[in-house]
Length: 180
Image (cartoon, rainbow, N blue to C red; front, top):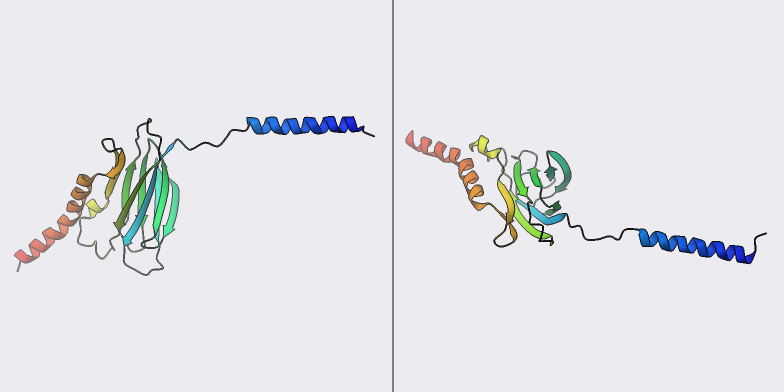
């Protein structure tokens, strides 16, 4: 039979091993690789409410996250710094929309910043007279703006791509008026 002294010694050694294990376990720290909490919302699309929007997040050409959401519901992703992401938004009988997110970000800023955006989806019927080639390009490019230390979208690019998308419809209207 074991003596009380032997059992006590074993118990103390066992407790000390637990203490040393917990002391050597790494502590959880804030994720310094994350830099952007991105929220988005599809505010307009046609079709039945049961048709959900599919939002896919790509990194280096591979899907890293995917969510389904109803119109006007928020989706969100936390993005890593110094990466180039693509967000693809799709819905049945609608034209897919792409958004590029460049998270190149100064290392001296350790905060996780926020960026929110709203977008709409065009039905295939609405898009039939629009510039199909321009619809294949990203609708927006989001990037870090050093001057104000925040993420923004490139307004000039977005305006130019919208003009290009709708240019075919305008040309068709002008041609139709001219032929009357």
